[in-house]
Length: 300
Image 1 (cartoon, rainbow, N blue to C red):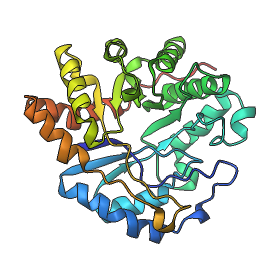
Image 2: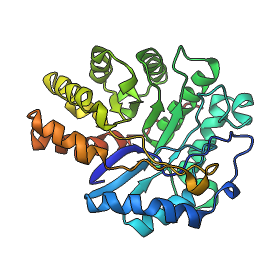
Image 3: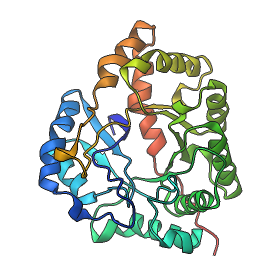
Image 4: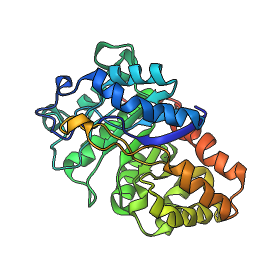
């Protein structure tokens, strides 16, 4: 994977699952807008970008392939559904089908390609609400666990606070999924570093993924905290930046992917963080987080 940004977006469409369609954007216009931002990080020696936009929220595998080929940056896409937001971004079948049936859809994408293409997902992207898990959140997490067991793909879950994170980890335990296959996404929204420490000790990856320059101090503090507890190998950092918005003129304002390089890395260096620790975060940890795990087929 090389130097990697583990949580970014190139296009997101919040119109809702009942209205979203590829015809809402022109791929050539998106490429014209987005390509310079990918070329910018390639010059900074980033080799891989993980695009975390799920199906029914703007995932367009053909567009991502075109952008990857034109920019020279590897792009990972995903399978999975976004169950936060009161169901606005879930297809209707997600409410009527069982977790097993939903999982089979995702397994099919992993094994046979997305929507008839030769493009395969590199991970499972889901989301849950910020509070206690609702039944629909739980079903989506269960489907992700089943998909992981069949495919070995890592589960990246848009989560936020600690409560839903630990509820998800309990579901993983119930379904025989090792916590090392789980990325607690938006963990930066949890203020208690000790919660991050607890989840990391269980084996989960802790993703601080909405970096902005004004947050540099807290991110440095978090890195030093995890280093102190010998758990830096469980840390992921990214921007959650981008992205082209089909409903806005010229795709709206695009937040670039360079703030980590321009602000966080210098702040880490100034705080005395060693180069091999920075290498750990941006080179080694993404490989460990997104590796294909040994498969444990689901019971019939």
